[in-house]
Image 1 (cartoon, one colour):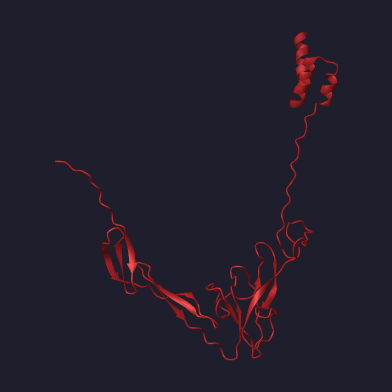
Image 2 (cartoon, helix red, strand yellow):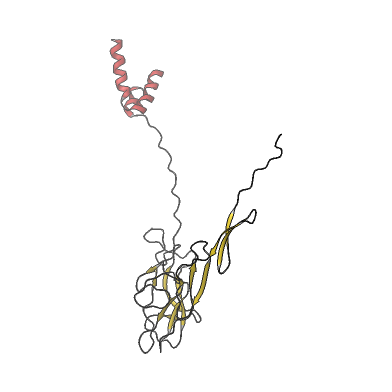
Length: 252
């Protein structure tokens, strides 16, 4: 008897599949199904908090297969006789803390970095603009100058009176090409902070070797042996004088 054309069995390659109610593992090679069960969802976790002008989002994740269920969080109810100042794409990771850092409604206590929209409520019965955050310089330079209304490009600052909701965007100071100044030579523009290129340092030439004056004087009019001694003196300081004295002693 004999065995011919034997092939090794293919191993199972199980991968999770799921519906809204359950999950299972299914082999991609043969279709075998194992571990079929209902989802085990985690508690709700807020991904984006709701604000006065936008909805939020929360999620639950299956602990076994990571199936995710998402739903929206309704917008918050705006307090009576209040106006909202919105800052879209708010860079909360680069803020000089002149005010509390929040996203969503500003409570004066929360410093969460969830979401990218920051909302500030106006102050008092006359709806004045609250203190606005001051942004740090950009990585490539340019200093923060202030805020303007996104729709009209009009400047806005603390204490201005508002009659409706607004969105504001930052303004950056830029001197423009070939107009930067650098009086203190720190390779950054004195006006806008733009990083200037550092000039390349010239490569210095190595100094030429010189022959000590005393060695050259003693060798003046000498033989080839004296020239060799002079070269040795240039490399070893006063070694020529010591060599000459030793030679004179040997001749005596």
